[in-house]
View 1 (cartoon, rainbow, N blue to C red):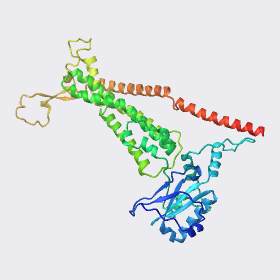
View 2 (cartoon, rainbow, N blue to C red):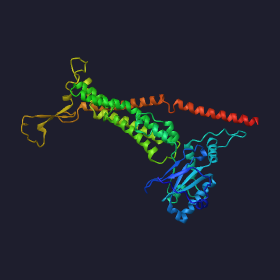
View 3 (cartoon, rainbow, N blue to C red):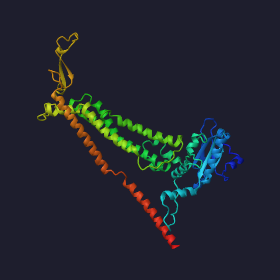
View 4 (tube, rainbow, N blue to C red):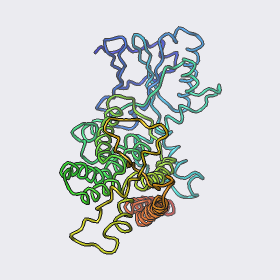
Amino acid sequence: MPRMRAQPASHSASLGLCQAEESLRILAGTEGDSLPLMEINAGETEASEQWDYVLVADRRTQRNPGQACQQRRFLEELRTKGFHYKVLEDREKVFFGVRADSRIFDLYRTLLMEPEGPAAGVQPARPAPIPATTRIRIVNFVLNSKTAAGDTLEDLVKNGVFETRFALHKGEDDLKKKWAQWRNMVHKQPIDDIRDYFGEKVALYFAWLGWYTYMLVPAAVAGLVIFLSGFSLFNASQIRWGWEYGFTTIFVAAFPLAPLLALFSNLVEIRLDAIKMVRLQRRLVPRKAKDIGTWLQVLETIGVLAVIANGMVIAFTSEFIPRVVYKYHYGPCRKGADPAVDCLTGYINHSLSVFHTKDFQDPIRIEGSENVTECRYRDYRNAQDYNLSEQFWVLLAIRLVFLILFEHVALCIKLIAAWFVPDVPQSVKNKVLEDKYRTLREKIRSSRKSTDV
């Protein structure tokens, strides 16, 4: 892969470039449509030598006086704010490597930690290394602030002054080994490493998706057992079929293998997202987040609707309730169970209504049907006037009662689980308190030193 040509010194001087030699290099593919890759020298260890952002422009903008002037003005304003940059050229693109000075991070760290400023007579604590996610967030914020001319970087991109901008990938090899590989599909996700590289928002997404996938395992096992038991019970008795069908509708109302398929889908989705984000896409700008936001209310609403929908499926589309009602109210076991008697004997005839063939308005003569006087159909109607029978209304009332009880019991279980499981784990609370305690000790130590002086 050929090394791109550095910009001539005369042009660099006109743009107010830094004269220091940075070990930043740009590699471009031999094909014209290949994307350029910016890499950091492995020997750079100091924070001041980290390149944070890359701005990309088309070479044609260098021949446009208006766009070239806007580029120079924007870069010069970055220099006055404490940024360093370097310009390198390809055959078609111009790349601006941007690096923020350490005093910018010190300023924003002070503003974020102590918005009202440090206390009088208290020296600031010894600064800790700034995480890469914080560096990118601060640089992204400054780059997207309005310039003296009233433009933002987004406006310059829209106007074609710059083609695009992105943060640099650095230190992603560890994530590639631990996370962005298919062989790690069943391994625990390195949430802390994801947070340190992509920020809290992305880490929360994958933490929630991983927990949801883990909770699909019991449902997938139950669904698979129920699905396979259907083959082994194919010639079983009617009561065994009722027992198996009842458990099927209770645990998986529509399709027993749905949780298993969702489990496989989520396992593949997690690795696909990891591979795309680490290997194929530009690095995302890290975002802070304390929770999953509006999606929490959306998921809670979906959970309530799912309980109601499953209750209606069990109550109105399955034969779970009609079988139970017949067994204890109409069947041979209504006065007490007898081991020698099947409690569902006669259920099929009980669930069918009678229609007299003489009541056909336009009877259709079929060979061999002359002696047929009545037909049976699935419904609960009177044989005389074909109106809904008393059994239909009894079943409807029991279905509605079951739906209400099912919904209330499920929601009560949800509320009890929410009460027992805290929103913030105790380990997270302890870590936050430890960080506050450590910061407080640093401030007290600094205060004592300043008092002694």
